[in-house]
Image (tube, rainbow, N blue to C red; front, side, top):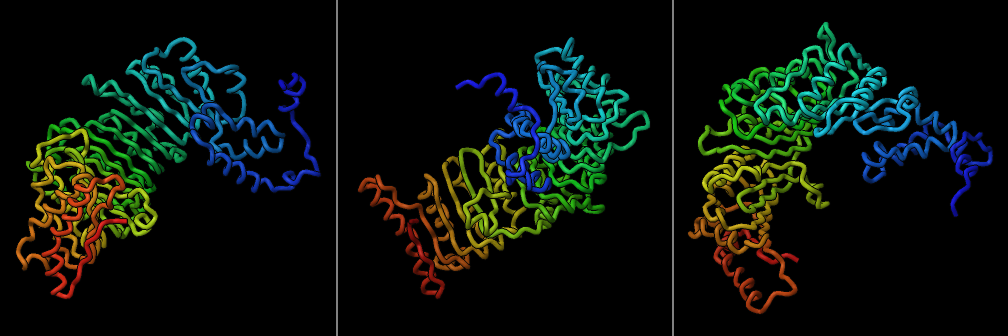
Length: 500
């Protein structure tokens, strides 16, 4: 039944505490915890909580609930969004106490008329602006920078700028030196913790980066261009960001000039960095980490590109990875199409079948020749050799036979001196088994092959396999018989079986 107008209005009016309701005896601190737990459990969080503002339903219950929520608006991420789409009652909204979120992401529209008026109106309350997300053309940014002149943002926590078009047309977006810093070029306010800058050159943002001393989250998509010392400039900026916890960096695939050689002196320590993601040229990455150290790292996701067969060996990445304090139990190598990935799993990730938090892969968008793919795999495994030498399980999953036949398996497997279990999977598992054993045909070869090995697991039987497929799978075991016999005679038995 549709509620009457009086009932509808009554739902939103302030009510007094009822002494008979248990919830009215809950302390404000506990009530806030309940609200926060409810917030974090919402699916499609950004859409429902931030854009559609379902939190308003809680604030309408009573005056006390509203007071508790508004007093912790930052923790509960409450705010009024001002953007290119016209909201209702903009003047009344801006006159309230809640933080303001500026969100303009319409490249195909002009920042004129009411949209520009709303931006200026929101900036008139810059002391309440908590987040700024701006994406558009150069003309949009020109008006945006003009509108923010002389504005102070004492509570700004998050800033996201996406140029998107300038560099694609050969233009270098310019950030005014005074942007967010004022005429005296002072450091950014310590409230700014999250910064995202996309499709910019390093030279155009170095001033802003070097002044953002309190950042905890940094997302950069930068164009390297022909600057041979770009990694040095970036490191100089990093030195002033001691609290950084998350670093997400993407660079151009192709670079016009090789980075200048770096020496490990003056290491920049990231004592709080737990997340590092990199997408881009491996030459730049190796030069960048020459002066970086991040022992607390837990999440590492590197998708590299660029030919490796024509450059010098990867020099600095091994030291950077070896500095990571995390211990790993298993390695998973996946060969698919013209790409590969090499993942390291902790013992808990392996036991609980979790997604690995350490992953190195060849970028899917960088399809090189077979010889380059093999060279990339071997260089990456060499860079991880210290970590690989302590793992106890190796899983190889292959979905291709394009180039895996040329992998120097003897050299690759030599690094796994502590592996106790080798598990082979994928649609090309028979080929992988043959290729591995092909390198160990002589009796003297059987003992050095994975010296700590105790078992080899092949993929399980499928319920719908035909008799011929069953016979073929059973014959796979015969491939391992010489190896199993040699290890048995040496007192180091190895079990070969199909998975359950």
